[in-house]
Amino acid sequence: MLEKETIDLERTVIVGIVTQKQSEEKLKEYLDELEFLTVTAGGQVNKRFSQKMEQPNPKTFLGTGKMEEINVYTREHNISTVIFDDELSPSQQKNISKILDCKILDRTNLILDIFAQRAETSYARTQVELAQCQYLLPRLSGMWTHLERQKGGIGLRGPGETEIETDRRIVRDRIALLKEKIKVIDKQQGVQRGNRGAMVRVAIIGYTNVGKSTLMNLVSKSDVFVEDKLFATLDTTVRKVVIRNLPFLLSDTVGFIRKLPTQLIESFKSTLDEVREADLLLHVVDISHPEFEHHIESVNKILEDIKASDKPQIMVFNKIDAYKHLEIEEDDLMTEKTNRHNTLAEWKATWMSKLGSDNALFISASNKENIEEFKEKVYESVRQIHITRFPYNKFLYPDYHEAVEKETDEEEEI
Image (cartoon, rainbow, N blue to C red; front, top):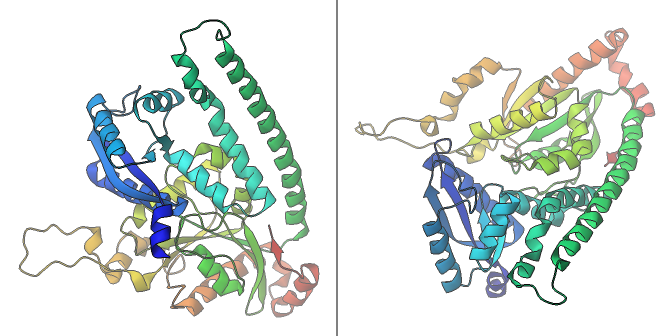
């Protein structure tokens, strides 16, 4: 059984570059993530290639020598796919395809492929297809490179261009159709959101694979799909949650990632509307990940892109049970202490202390550690928003939930 699964995995190599803006350490981190993405998509990484350059080669991304090295390796080891860590331009993809006799993907294409695999609902599939079409449109010419090898002759003058133009028209028409379809669904979902009344909305956000869905299941007692892979959840799930006597809406959103394709941000705008329209954001962070600080930066950058960075946030540092710090021997005077040597107590004394006890929580969703403290702080934050919105309920508050439950009496899943 295990032997068969190994055979079915697509053999790949991954490629990245070291530049003035991207150090070797940073590249290793990106390639680790790219490998995880590749495994999630159903591939097996056989080797990594990297090259130091001032900037990517505008023609082939890498230098001639490195491209030849990859070419030799792919032929000798029967590699079917080469995946580049950065997005390739249409001309780069076309030129690389002439050198390497295998499938060429970039990070964007890989993420789109994972989204296509993970899309369960009609809406998610429509969003992913729109992103794929937008990505494909400028790259159609690369699909007709076999015609460039023809030297002309009877019946071979210009058919390639005709085919490309036909395909471009088909893809443009498809994009227009998908956009119209998304508009209709967006309108329906806008009505749904409006029907939820004035209940306080809380959105769980964070980097992909940090435990958002696990936390959602724990708090709302729902059954959102959970898996230790990237982008396990694509569809936004909304549940009504009651903590003590206070009801509110809790939504689990799609995970963010560094270098998130712009096509996905565009096509998933409606899904991200749950974040835009939320009253409170629970920013979940996997503190056991060595680069969790960069994950926080990436999520905040995307929040800026979708104009949601000004919303109140509670930082929820998850997976404290899995956190392990690097230790330095007492007599070791050579090793310089870095953030990775911090204990949890030391982390709490860093910039995290400026967040204050009301805006920083340390939990383990899988082991249910500090969950009661988490619920209490969410309750207090939601209560403050609620009282601001309904000041007349400040004293009659304990009985208010009965009226709200009549207004919104069902669980919703988008």
